[in-house]
Length: 134
Image (cartoon, rainbow, N blue to C red; front, side, top):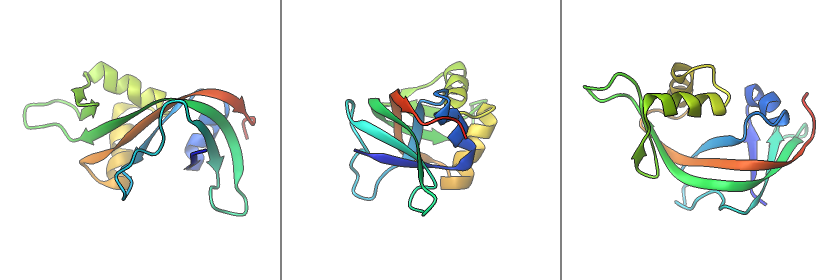
């Protein structure tokens, strides 16, 4: 069962069933982190003594995603999923679905954490169990 650890800011939205997706960087071996149909476990404090499972779910999507700054003609960030460029409205929805306040917050998070351009995987799931909000 693939397992994912989360920063504190994402624990409550996951536990409440509001956040049902995560974006992860590419693995060193190049393989996707999971596949549709896999059972997933979501953890707070992953790999610590204080680890606590916050939810489980079943993967519905695992697809390549890229996030980059706008090109010289663009007004906002460039985000692609499966090589399809998202519209500004779709990027805003993606950011909100991933528990960010705005597109700017979303892009800043990935720039600070991983640098841009970012390449990785978007993973979506249907919840099967919530452990309760902290």
